[in-house]
Image 1: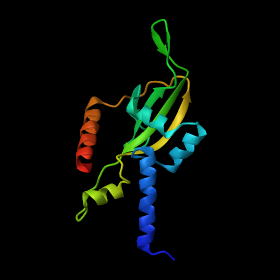
Image 2: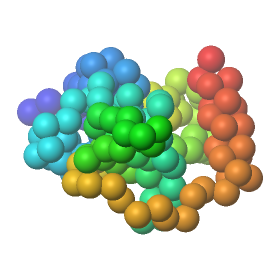
Image 3: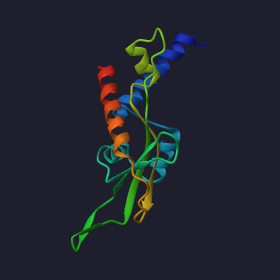
Image 4: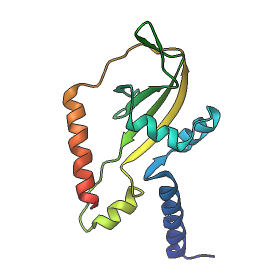
Length: 152
């Protein structure tokens, strides 16, 4: 039977392999299932997160939902589309318990700052919800900059 240290070593190797293949973004099992269901790749999900057409508060607590149309058509000077891709994710906050180093924080967070909760295709154009207030957007940007500084 493998020791606990062997188990941890294997788990860390799996996390590193998963992290390197997805560019530092972790996907929940639910998100991976939905990606298969809707034929969405990890690269497509990251593209939606990097360049969203719309950004709103997610349904779950402390989550962000972003949307990008599948293909935009221009009719009479207006943009139209028939399908949207939505991604709901959460920013992973780093904790600083006593005795933890930067390396152990990276291991605790899986080495990433974003965890994708879910992804889906929406047929048609979804109704406009409550957009995220500018104040919160600025806080998120500042927090992501601080997380990058902490990781470096």
